[in-house]
Image (cartoon, rainbow, N blue to C red; front, side):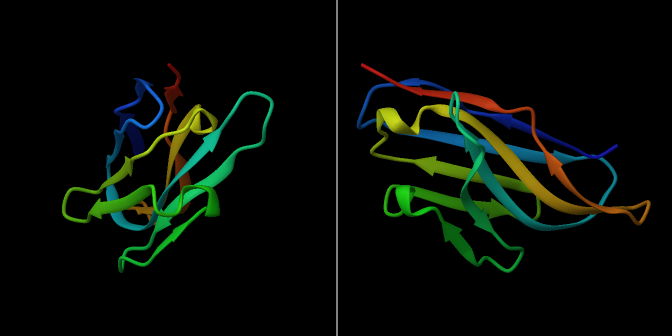
Length: 120
């Protein structure tokens, strides 16, 4: 069974920082792109940042210059460093990864989500 487990969410004041982590585990043959999405109450889930296995990165315009995505390919972990947080960053953040299992199947996997709340 392949799964993603996130950690690092919480409550932070505006202007503060948080670091999210997401570890892929199970019978994984290969991990391709990894990324972070978020969903605020009453809104659709949106892409925050994505990183390919080769290290290419893309960010939503709303987080450019404040957030940084990185990954540890040896450990199958993706990180999201969030700086200068704003109240509008409040959302449930979901990890996403495109992976191929040893069974041969390739799928898009989602983590369970971690709450990030930015408030004074």
